[in-house]
Image (tube, rainbow, N blue to C red; front, side, top):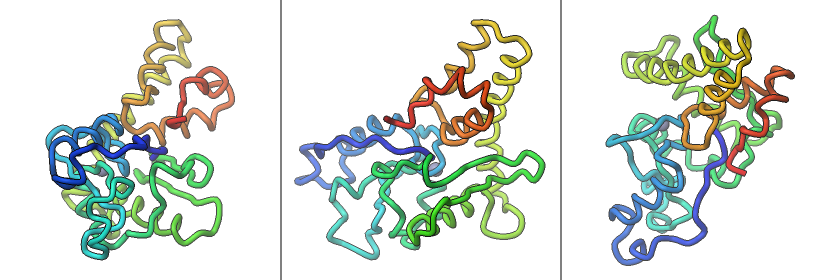
Length: 211
Ligand SMILES: [Zn+2]
C-alpha cells in the first residue's frame, strides 16, 4: 500500500449524478492508475467506488469526493462497513508508519505499525485479513487473491535477482519498469528494496511513493 493520489477538484458530474456515474468512476480510475488502494492490484472490470466512511454508517458522505476511492471487489467486500475509521489513503505517508513485507517461508504478508494509533491498528487488521485470510488458513477466494498477488511480486523478485547476478543496464531497466507508479504491489516492492543498502542506493530515486 502506498499513498494514493487524488485530484483536489471533484468531477463536475458528482453533485448532480452521484458517485455511480461514469465520469466520477473514470476520474477515480485515472487518479489511482486503475489500482485498488488496498491491495494495489490492477483492476479491469472488477472494481467498485469505495466509501472510506461507509454508506451504511454515514449517508451524508455518500457523494463526498474526499470519501471516494477505487477498490477491487475482493477488498471492498471485505472492508464493508467494519473499517470506516482507517486513515484516508491520500493523506498518509504509509512508508513511515506501516512496514510491509512478504515472508516467503510462511507465505504471509507481515504488516507492522510503528506507532500506537487506533486508525493504523484498524488498517493493519484489514490488511492482514485481505492478504492472509480471515481464519487460520486462507479459503478458496483468499488463496486465489494471494496467488494473483504473488505472481506479480515473484516476477519483481526474479528481475531483482537477475540484476544482482548480472547488473547490466538492461537488467536495471527491467527492475525500474517494476517501480513506476502505474505498477502493482509498490508498497511491498519499495519496502523490499529499502531493506538492502546496495539496491536502495541504486533504485531509491525510482521509488516515488506518490510524492
Ligand atoms: Zn484490492
